Length: 205
Ligand SMILES: [Fe+2]
Ligand SMILES: [Fe+2]
Image (tube, rainbow, N blue to C red; front, side):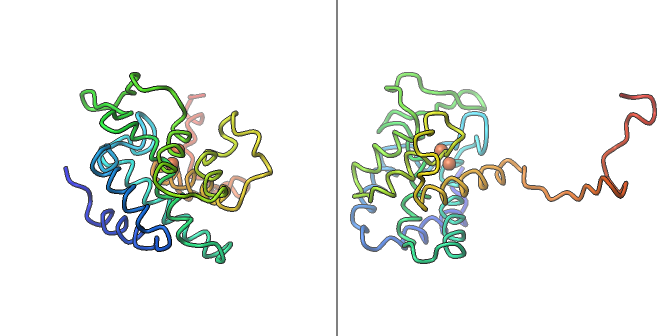
């Protein structure tokens, strides 16, 4: 199945916002598209977007959310930094050239255990920095993008740069949206206007 044209369009539009490091980014994108599963890999094996093209869909969504947040919260930081961090924060999930991290098994995905073990955030930083000259703030944002969900990220608690805060929030928000967890419910408990089924009423517990 091909990539959704809307996602493809958004992806190319995001890339066009990279101007200062355009040549480096083009090299990196060429590498990702030709030598890895970047355009087809899932975003996870069993959580959000564990489907074909899930990784590129998620990455486009995170970069787009980061740009929206930065425009409201801190417009002075360059769009280029948000695109590089947002779009490439999970590139470690592709694994290595010609050695994908996720392997298709029947209708789902499993980990390829053959790869040298490292966190996907560390692999993202490793891959991105082979091609793109990152600022130290961009490097922190890519490496620690999972924020304080990960125990090993403790050393940067309260020492996060703006890009790290933006990518962490954009990533968790986007994953929750992709999981369908962002439904707005009106539970007015104290006015008895809830729409929770009162199962206990008829003898349940
Ligand atoms: Fe991630
Ligand atoms: Fe992510």
